[in-house]
Image 1 (cartoon, rainbow, N blue to C red):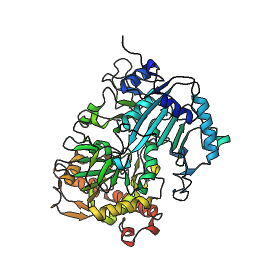
Image 2: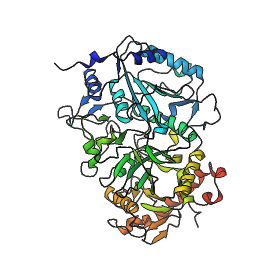
Image 3: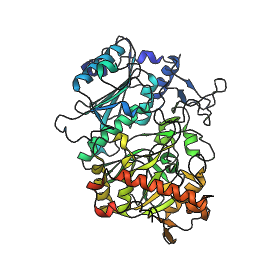
Image 4: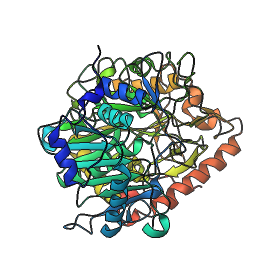
Length: 535
């Protein structure tokens, strides 16, 4: 007879004791450190989701299908209260309110089963963080296990308590809504309630490391990374939906990781142990590595699945455009097992340009790289955040504004030091629209974007003549194998040149307006590296 995973409950008494130290003493079962197969079995038994035809576990998160950045709060370290970048991203919460919310979570969890999974973050052992996730749903523990690195022999240094059904009382707690994501940096606890969107677990860990790593001299980065045949490391910066996962999953290169990395004095290392890929309109033909990774042990989030055939419909966005797949990095064929690489030779900034005016590929000077890093221009892609139903232009500093506890200039200074010390060619890649803006033009064809990226990585563009874009001042290659010449020059791709000029003028103005927030901290050379005033 197959073993019942329920019989494995409470065999880890040390976990029970540490839960008790947090004030968590549930009357239900505590399932600690279960393997993936047992968590999947429990999740199916509990009705948390279903298995697909390929064996992946599929779950829905309910009404909330993306992050809730306006419901994120932060409690600083007592020793460093002035280091936090306070504002719309980091809202303060009184420790008294945190305690009240934690009491509400404890009460909510009292009668429920708990699922405890330990793991770690950061492939560089000098910076590894022991992480524990405590959740009231088996699939949340499963997803955390898929994305974290293996556990280490240390007590938890960061604890995530995810209780999706526990809700805040805005009138009593002073929260914006019933949702709360609280990063208590002083106590190294993250409290999540009111939302079952599992991405909050992942991004909370990243946010905490964006605070901790710079104090250790490490540059934390919202980027994917891979290694070429010659051992050359490349970084792909960008927000969700800009192509980090898709473009870094290249069968000709070894994947280090798809989303979160650190850059230390020794080189680049993956923060995570898994990938969290967007799957909307995923196809076997264009993204075979990701397609093949979605098998038993992977988790699908908010993907429509046929109830009879159990076949996922990745083209169906009726639940959300923000459909996801979580799987260990080694589900990608040829992934780099160490999760580490050398100092990068090439850096690519990915921007999903909803205006359709940025070149599909352009080379940047170091000053332009710092300008565009601080700007972080892209478009919010539908579904990634609550309330976003179609792409809209936005600026997300350092390509990671929702996850930055420190001021953006702290991260820009780390990038500047790395570029100065190690050197790297920096490119801006427009994965957004061409021939017109959103609703008029079309999305950049993925095969053309891949051709441009590969040419930038293998050095085949080094001898190609460039022209300077008259608006953005970027060096644009005049030719690239496999890419139509008119697509390289966005103005030529538009049917109406005057309409292009108007949109380019508009976007250039938005860049300049946005950069005023950082102008005082930037050098004159960086301030002058942005879009030019329209003649």
